[in-house]
Image (cartoon, rainbow, N blue to C red; front, top):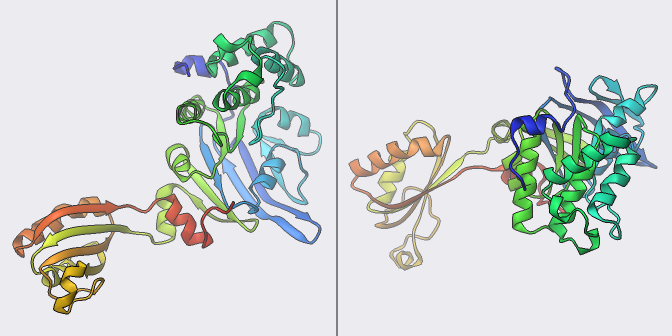
Length: 351
């Protein structure tokens, strides 16, 4: 996709307010006896990308439909740029939202340009403004050269990009993206993620749902984790990791008196747990794989649970040198959103 300047992007999105773009407070929605969403509150600032994560059936889609004004909450409020979604200001609030659904909502027998013209008219764009916005969006999603071709001939990635373009036509203040990279090739996925980054840098607020944890890590300023209809955690990656007390894991492959070395590691500031393991070839000597510190081995691994593992490595290497231990390799595994998600929900993302 074309690399646009900050000025180019600023011209394609509606200016935002100085306060929150989206404020959801106490959103609740029932379907019969089932509570699909239970008291969810979310706030998104201008230029912020907020990731909403959760297993299928957790309530993400219901929250999105209420945010976009497609579903009325049983309780709670949705306010977009100071306008409440229901009541007299509902129509104006909905006009500030660009919604890109997971299922591609395009007409395959129309060209890319014809699709954008159609959706532009749905947004009440007319005349020169409609023509200008269609061409701007085609350029933004890098489909200008394919504008006259039918969508049925497009690849999955091209359709996704045009789908996003349709949601940008009316210059929304809040862009809602529901699984925008599902089923696309790596190049198109990269282009879509780069575009979302540029949208947020231009001042647009973005509500983003995904099943790909690396996308959330890469794009989102803050993340909310929803399960069984409730928002069970919210914050930056660092804040979420801190909430569940996840720590870095340091694995050292080393030679020497690892039991004594592991015992000494316990006294290092920032170390919260220590263990050793030995290869099966050493098991005959009486030391079983996975044994905790205290067993004398000559070759194997030392595992540390620590805060700021990368910063701790120099002290670990210095201690190994003083103890006569040779470190052959070291790996630091930092907690990520997936480990936080699994800790909080007790399951992988459910299909």
